[in-house]
Image 1 (cartoon, rainbow, N blue to C red):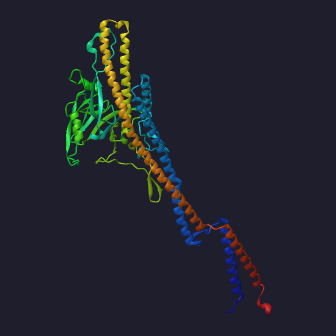
Image 2: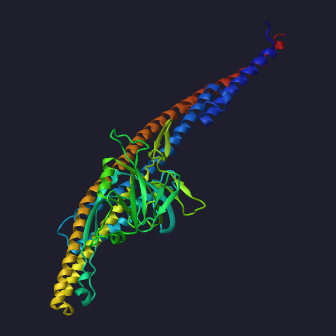
Image 3: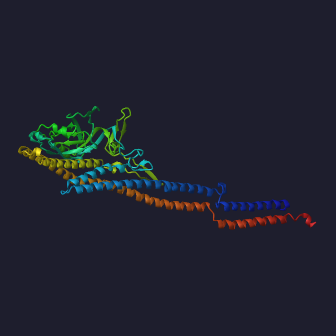
Length: 531
């Protein structure tokens, strides 16, 4: 094959351009410290880079956004639950203190003040929020757990599932002494009250001051019973001897509705009047939200392990009260043209959970929220209210005895007749005081146990949040390691060490210079040089 000058020039040009291309490639790598500038430079490296970058982007989302967000949510939740725990412990401490027999009137007033302050902050922690989202209200993160102001026109129809296990003994006191205002009243023996006491089993509704007891018949017609002294029939389900609960196994019970304890007492036909319930029946006290059962009725419910679905309407809520939609199936009927129905339980009585899940790793989610019903027991507020009433009743009864003893020393009542009658008044007042003190002591002892139950619930919720936090910490550590590994793999796939590039660049540039020098020599020799 004959090699011509054109062939030599052509090959020389190709070599120069090749060396020049290497110099350009290495110059770009030196500037960017990347192996390739475009996918066509190395398709395999480019495809691997896309995959690694996509994986790293996912890990960054988990590690730098989702996990910190979940951590903050759990921190807010844990702080709120811990505060609730402190409140309950303080209430329990007050109960232990109040259960002592040696307390003075001033001591009881101090306890009363403490309980009133604790009542005001009972559920305030339930409104804790993270970045504007309330953490205890399930999916309704834009709503508060409690009413934040008095809403006297707000009305709900509430369905509350109860059972024989909710029965608790409670004492009812009537015929309180009214301190006479003048000599004539003192001498009027008919005005001397005879304080009474009665003990019944009751089921306490979630709210007091209810409007009516609502009963729906088989045809679906609902009757709202609110008239004082009116009677309505309710149904309950019960178990058979095998322990199962057939759908069609039900019993009926008459319930008489009274506005208050006073109205219930007035209905008594006994002398002196006392709290009476017809055998096998119950009464509902609207202003306290209590369904009180006769002994036979309570025994029937307990023996048959009965369950009741009690429906009632309540209008008017005060600041700090828990909103019913977070605890019961209910309907907000404030706007009759736009009723809002809320479901807390399904038709089988199972709680409908509203879990807020965070994706914290590939194929791994974490439920960050804790629902209010799992922390803030609805009965706690009712317990504190009853304690406050019991302490106040004891203080009032003690004051009556003090006032009557002071009257004995007054000139106006110095006659023998007045002194004798005042002794009868004092005896009645002391009886009321003894009843009140006994009730207060029993409530203190009873509610120490209740506080322990509430604390168990709060502690369980706190443990659950702590477990979630530990799980999240492990995931965070794993994501940190994965992020580091992916970044290292990405760097190995895309990046080059500057020192390596410099060495290669120096060699390539030297080769380029040599090719230029070689090309200059080739053009100096022609055929004429040999003629």
